Image (cartoon, rainbow, N blue to C red):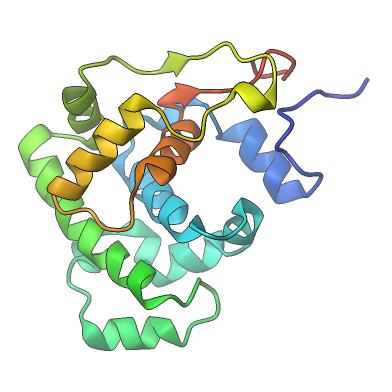
Length: 187
């Protein structure tokens, strides 16, 4: 029997695994290390395919020290130059610099709110996860009023490379929002 997945999933094993084990799954909403990883990957994905990012995921984990926020926040210009030469990640200066900046902001958010989930719930005044009921891929938005509001607040708080579309993709991939379509076995 063929398993039905969301229409966006390719037949690549990394895509299938991400969809089946992570995307829309709220099990990691209280794991700030995972949330920072996904924030980083979703920002890196801007202008590229998600599969390209999944193929570089191990590289990101390695160069960003398994997303150790304290260590990343100490990176300097020499680290940026070193990372610009590392083909295990997307070599885009603004994206690399945003990871370092965002680690610093993320640490401040943790100090103020206790966790990134608490911050998001405070900003949006919602409890998560939210489960949507889409029938077709074409119904799934690429941004929402919530992602617009959250991305504006995140920018105000100092986050870089994180607009409303990236924000909504982050919310989907981490499970803040469950956008599996009704025909998907994970709906």
